[in-house]
Structure formats: structure tokens, C-alpha cells
Image (cartoon, rainbow, N blue to C red; front, side):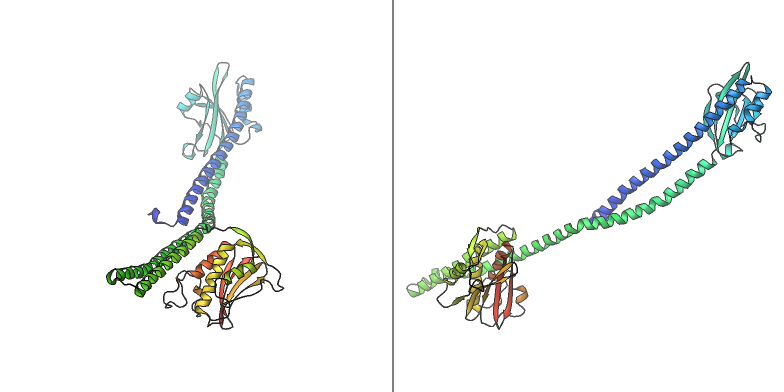
Length: 420
């Protein structure tokens, strides 16, 4: 049952139980400490009074006047005083108002006549209500007495009752407040964990999708390559037919090789392990190197800065060249000339743009342009894998930048924004 509860609720319950144990122990300690302190004060008062009465009794040699003086002086304060003959339980001296009946039973008197002691009488055991009695034997000449002094416990019991009530009311209130605070604190503490779990789940979902899409993309050229090889074995072509079959097989093999390289790059990017060999890169030289991959006049290279001054950035040259080549490949394959390659400085960044004058991207493709295996024209004859723009974004993010795509002036515009 508990195993099915949410983690936040489990932690809050554990915190609440721990706080309940602490509050209970604290309340018990405070209650017992207060009771002990009150009892100590009462005992100290009784000891002082018992000593005073005993001294007066001994100083008066136990005569009638000594008995009267011992129990009726005002220094004793509130409470009772009795002087009893333990053998006959005769009260020979008592504070006014107590009467002639001893407050102690025969067994108690016999025991106290030997050693003395302290004990409590509850309401049902004494007409005086709850009292604490301290008694001691006193010998005066041939007379043996038991002197008993007592103090009412009503105020002490009332104070303990009030404290007990406050603890019983305040404890649960404090526990509820602590549970609410624990719920809030645990929620705040788990929020980063929840976000991490969400990212982990998203990552696992993307990985599953990536593996499924990769399997599908790999299956197509492998199937085509197998069919071509089987046809070659069956028909055993020669001459131009043989060359055409070999060229088709080489094309499928090249596509498999390119797809494998792209998948490896994205797998490394997912693990934040995309290797970067940073160096000072001159953008004009970088653009020129990309343009030389294509026939003369296919790609126009713009200035790296508005005033024509050299612009250099700290980056991995090979990965940037590959990303820009992917963008130019897309522009050449799907756009229309002129294809332009240039830079636009922004506040703190340099944007590397590739534009064309074609029809631009379909509007529904722009939000998913950088998704893996996403193609603006899926029926393009199998020329693309849908990983080019995903690699562009991976390269930009590895450099601490971003990638963007838009339609401008009828054509497509794709760029990498890198730290300047």
C-alpha cells in the first residue's frame, strides 16, 4: 500500500512521523521536568517546616506548651501540621482546623516512627484533598512522636493539568503545521528531481524514436543494395549494364556511409561528447572553403562583416564547415539560385546564414525543421536522410549557440548563431 504512494507523500509522511516523535519526546520531557521542579520546591518547603516544628518540640522538652507552640506559629505557612503518638495514634498537637483524627494510618505511623518519609495522598485518601506529606520521628526524653507536615497539591496539579492541556492542543497543531511545511519543502526539493526525470523520460523517448527512425532509414538503402546485388547475380550483366549496377550499389553504399556518420555525430551530441577542436577561424576563409565544394557560380560568398574587416571566432573549423555544407546542400537541392553564404553580427553573437531564392520551406515544416529524420519534401527520391539540419543544430549547441530557420523574401534562410 505504502509502496504505491507518490514519493512526495512518502517523504512527507516520514518527515511528519519524525517530527511527531520529536514533539512527543519534547512534550514529555517538559512535562516531567516541570513536575519534578514543582515537587522539589514543595519538598524543600516541607523539609524546612518539618525541621522547624521538630526543633520547637525538642526545645520545649515535649510539654503541652511546646506542642502548642510547635504547631500554631505562623512561620509554617499554609498546610497542616500534626504531632502524633505512633503507638496509640493519638493526636497530641495539630494545626487549627485539622481536628483530632490523624491523617496517617496505623501502618504508616509505625513505619514513619522508625525512618520517616514522604508520600502523596490523593483526594479519596484524605479529607484535605490531594496532599504531600513529609513525616519524621522525634524523641523528646521518654516521649516518642511522629511529626507530620503537609502541603496541598491542588495548585501543583492544576498547573500540571494546564500544561498538559496546552501540550495536547499545541502538539497536534504544531504537527499539522510541520506536515504542511514538510509538504512544501519536499515539493521544492523534488522539483529539480521531477524536472530531471521529465528530461530523462524525454531523452528515452527521443532515443527510442531515434533508434526506430534510424532503423527505418538504414533498412531502405540496405534493401535496395541487396536487391541490386541479387539482380546482378541473377542477370549477370556486362558492359554498361554492369557499370550501371555497380554505380547504383556504390551510391547506396555511400548513402549508408553518410547516414552512419550522421548518426554517430548525433549520438555523440546526445551525450555531450561531440568532439570540438577549437581554434581561431577566419569566417571569410571558412566561407570560401565551403564555396569551393560546388561549381563556380553556384554559391555567392558575402562579406563576414559590414565594413569588410576580418572576423574571427573561436570554433571547431571542420564541424562548422560540415554544418554550412549541409545547409548549402539543402539550398542547392531544394531551393533556387542564387545561394548566398554570409555573416550577420548581432549583440554578442555572429550569425552564419545560408539563403536561397526558391519557394522557401512549407509553413508546417518550420517548427520541426531541426527534428531528426524530418524532411520538407519526403518524396524527393531518397536524396536526403532528414539529418542535415539536426546536425546543424547539434554543432551550434556544441559551440554554445543556437540554430534558426525562416522564410524571407520568398526564399529559405537557415543560420547558426555562435558566440562572437
